[in-house]
Amino acid sequence: MVYLKHEIEELPRVKKLKLINALSGIKPANLIGTVSEKGIPNLAIFSSVFHLGSNPALMGFIVRPTSEAPRHTYANICKTEYFTINHVNSSFYRNAHYTSAKFPESISEFDSCGLTESYEANFLAPFVKESSFKIGLKFEERIEIKKNNTILVIGEVHYINIPDQFDNNEIDLSEINGVGISGLNSYYELKLLDRLPYARVHEVPNFNLENI
Image (cartoon, rainbow, N blue to C red; front, top):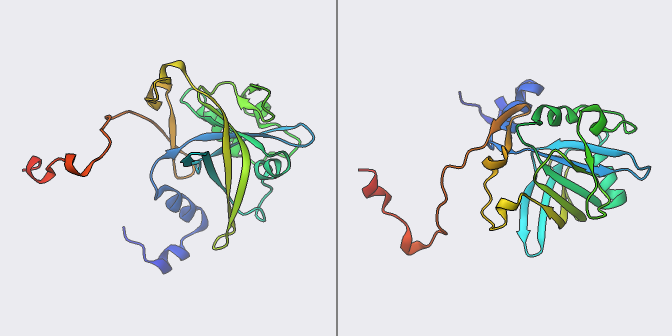
């Protein structure tokens, strides 16, 4: 199936959403936890979380246009400056998925979706107790993307809580049953295929010979 630009633009809304969201492949599934100024916890699933650098340790995620629907995660971060990123695993991905429903601001997704708030190291924003991979961040910067009115939210990592077996920096997300997302609602298990060495030009294999 081939789509030209004008055909993409003419696709039905939901079909286009699913198609374009799936083009980048499997993305990490994360729950972002925040709290409002009134103390109401908020939790929402995101597939747009990514690493921005390690010195300083920065992570970012994309917020959809705030004019289309209330964005409680973004509003809370703007007011309190703190948020958490929690990896989703196979034991609670269904619970995580339903945090995407448009709950009123007064309703906590933790309660509605059967997940547990966890407060660690006096961090303001709530973590997800069920997650075995938790990151606490402080808001640093936002960048507005004018083409589609989305916002890149950047936070600096202030806290990390990961399983002890990863203390040697060799992280295998399949060991903790990590989950990925493709499109809007397709969830995948993760599997480690290999650990390859740091790529140096003089060590690149002769792939042409290997494939003969």
